[in-house]
Image (cartoon, rainbow, N blue to C red; front, side, top):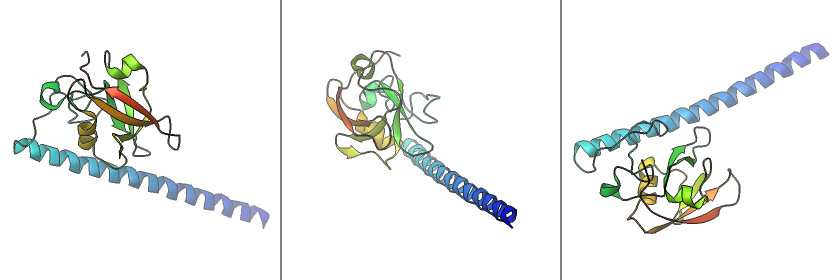
Length: 171
């Protein structure tokens, strides 16, 4: 009887683990669907002439990420400049995080923005749940202007505010 109970317990754990995995995959799928909807909306806006087309794509950012959304570069004359880093959405948590530091930008020069930090807020606006386009628009601005990022080392950690100066970066 004890052996049978042990097998039942093991089976229950396997079912529970499978259910958790299914829930995680479902959340990832829902995020992917939202990303596709966002990209479709961006493509419609480009086709209608409402926004300029992407200047370049960055492999670490996924499709339709402009140089402007990456924090500087080719689109700087159209949409402003950033702080010299790329960002991506964490596929497990959905949080936006610093991905890659670009040479010559504020992030590299200050050392205050590092890869892996969670982007909690921009100028006081919380970033959880906003689109890639919205986050890019919050970070981007006129060269020489400031932006305040709320950054976390990891989820649940205290938020540290970093005041950055928007500038062009090297390509």
